[in-house]
Length: 266
Ligand SMILES: Nc1ncnc2c1ncn2[C@@H]1O[C@H](COP(=O)(O)OP(=O)(O)OP(=O)(O)O)[C@@H](O)[C@H]1O
Ligand SMILES: [Mg+2]
Image (cartoon, rainbow, N blue to C red):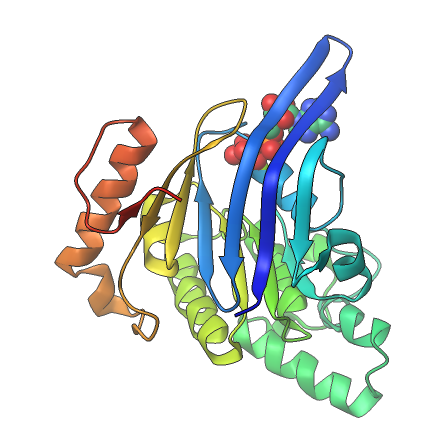
C-alpha cells in the first residue's frame, strides 16, 4: 500500500530575535493511504508546524517528508492534497461560491461542471443560501465551512486539516464531523487532522497521535480500533468503546500510563 504521508526524523527550529525555538524534534509519522490520523497535544507543541511542513508551506530543519512517495514540494505542485487550516484564508473579494470554486478554476474545470460542483459543496456545508455573500458578511464558523468546502472541491486523496472545526458551535461541529468521516470513507481520502478536542479526535480517527510540549515529539500513538468500516454515527458517540478510548487519549496526554488494547509503540 502506498503511504499518503511519510515523515522521517523531522525537526524544525525557528530563529527568532530572542534565540532559537525548537518546535519539532525527531518526529516520525506514517499515514497510510485512506487512513484518518489525528494530532493532539498542548498549545505550542508544533502541530501546525508539522502540518505546514507536510503541505510544503515551510521546510524542515532536518529529516525528510514525502507525500504519496514524492517530495513534499512535488506533491504541492501536483495539488495532491486539500488544505483547511486554523485561519480560513478566504479571498475577501470573492463570494462564497467564488472561493469554493477557486481550486476547480485552477485545474481548468469547465464552467458548467464547476457550477454544479460548487452547488453540491455549498449544500454539503450548509451555505447554499450564502453562496453570493462575501467572507466579511459571514461568521467565523461560516467562513471556516467555506474553507472546508474548498478543501474538498477536488476530492483530494489527502486532506490536511488544522483545527478546521474550532470556530463552530457544538451542533454544527458534530454534524461536520459526521460529514467529514462519511466523505473520507466515500472518497478513500487519507486525513491528517489537528484538534484540541479528545472526543473529536477519537470519533474521527483510526489512530490518534499524542504530542508532548515543546520541543514537539510524538509520545503516544493510540489506535481507536473501531474498524475501517465502522459507521461513525450517534451510536458510536455513546458506545463504551468510545469512552474507553477517550479516557486512554486523555491519560496519554497527561502522561499517565494506561493499559489500552490499541496502544502501540510506533
Ligand atoms: N514562524 C515562526 N517563527 C518563530 N516561531 C514559530 C513560528 N511558527 C511557530 N513558531 C513556534 O513554534 C512552536 C510551535 O508552534 P505551532 O503553531 O506549531 O503550535 P501548535 O501545536 O499548532 O499550537 P496551537 O495548538 O496553539 O495551534 C511555538 O512555540 C511557536 O511559537
Ligand atoms: Mg496550531
